Image 1: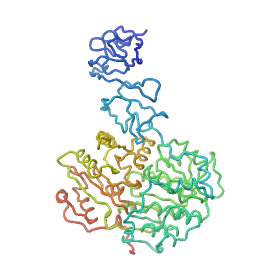
Image 2: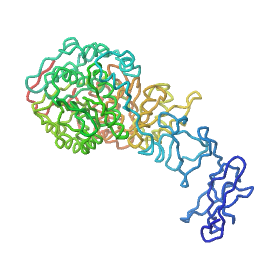
Image 3: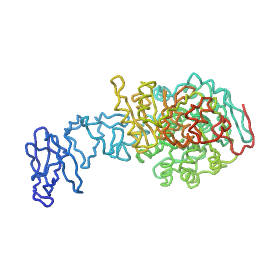
Image 4: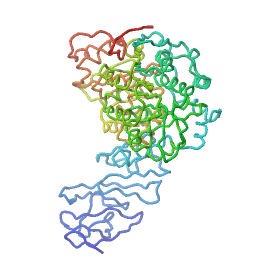
Length: 629
């Protein structure tokens, strides 16, 4: 026996029927020592022998019903709770809490936690959640490296074989092209033919009118047929011939208008038909890997989505794509690259790290593509992008084809983007009927009552049972709001909710997105990590719990609904002093879409007058010429 503290308590283990006591007794205000001893019959867990009982106990034995306040080592007082831990069916022993009150989560194979990042609660319903922990994330759960890593893109020999093959395989083909969780073409798809188009720059090629018009290789024509590409959107009509002629391009088009295919199809087709400047390089662990094409995306989820689309158009071409992003162990991605690849889709951080370590070398690049280019250059990524382009032997601006795509392209971003390309064309596709005509934009005045009440009224009313994406300003706010929503019921059923944000581990983020995409959760609370590029089917409502400070972010958020000719509803909860409201930017967005501005919303604007209606997300700041369809 050993003693602790100033008293003379012994240290021992008390065993009780039904499980061992696991609390550590600290001396109460009367007992100055700290120790462990056999608990009395009326005690619970381990306690100090001189009456120093612990209030917040950690054992599984029965305890006294009256909580006893104790003094901690810092002099603070802590009240006990009469809670009985329940046995975890996934473990053979009783699960202990950490001393500070945080709960440890175990990711065992038989753990039946929520796939959407929700943490399985092994405790009684009156469990305290006040210690900065929620069911949808926590510092010791789904945040950072302590949560599960990504399983996306792990090497599977069978898939590697068919990815590099030029022969058909029915099972792999079905995996690529028969995905019921993709956005389907909407009833308003034909309205894309009525949008305005501007092409500025010199010697722009003529647009194609159908996929049959393009000069594609037989392999690409076959893949377009499998992908059921019947009619190109305006961004595809103009981008495909431009890229096939190896012209640099800066393109701006509405969210959900087919920008991903607009740069993947012509780039991959060019790679099929042109010579490989890499020569006869062998891929092994002793030398870096040399991609031919590089796509850089701002978020991991968007990079994965582009990778899935690239696999479709690379089918039977003999070329292979890899996806490089943070949140997955580096050696898993390196093992994947050892099998060889031609097309690399990456996020800036992990790509820069691999280039700096000599894992990836960029001297063989023929196509450089920046998706969501305005964010890449404006949101802190520009130093990394500059380093990637200039410090790792990438061919110069005149020796590669550079493409940039986004839904918004402000003038200052265009000036920065011009540093990465020469003699480029600028393509501006007007938003359909103005600012997203297919999306019904609504606003709720929340200056005099709580936003939670307004949100729950929407979820229990018009959006009941439908798929709803809710945007918040902060990461912690997304988790708290998800908890609040899931504590509510509709017709006796809990509202199934998940959350996604940058502080969750990549595995938890992927699980949340998968559950929402497949309909296992009807509500997803998200930060702007989900605001750009993601194609999620059947999102009928987008609710902006917190309006963003920039109007570009507002446009990208509401673009998660009403995609590919479908209709949708976007609702903004307007609090006090919302920046984009007081500037009149939201009111202008409504006017551009031909929608009426509520009187109360118009009064909140501090801007004078109405600006000229703009049907484009961006215009060429050079304005050397203009051409319209």
